[in-house]
Amino acid sequence: MSLTLTVLPGEYAVSQLPAGSAVPAWAHSGGLWCVLSAPDELSVVCASDAVPAGVTTQPGWRALVLTGPFAFTLTGILASVLNPLRDAGVGIFALSTFNTDYVLVAGRDLHRTVAALREAGHTVNGA
Image (tube, rainbow, N blue to C red; front, top):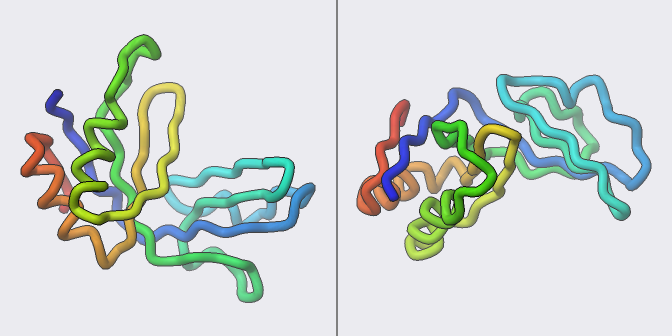
């Protein structure tokens, strides 16, 4: 399965707040942002430069979007991207929306990411 992905501009951070925290105003920053509340934490993905000091965070992520939309009945979409990255030793942070998927990789791994995806037959734009 050949897919088209686009590298989004900017750098993102994955941050962690205590369980039950309110969604902070800075979380709505950047072209891509996501807030997930789980029983043990509140996770925030947003532009790196929006995260205030003192927040547990891992900055330096780059985001790739899979060109969708994809029907919920399709299988193997995300695996066709993640497997080549696994084989290349690239760690990921994945997000899904109703229409598509996003894969975040460490900025230092972006070159290896693009090479691995192209080698697997995918098209990568914006790299």
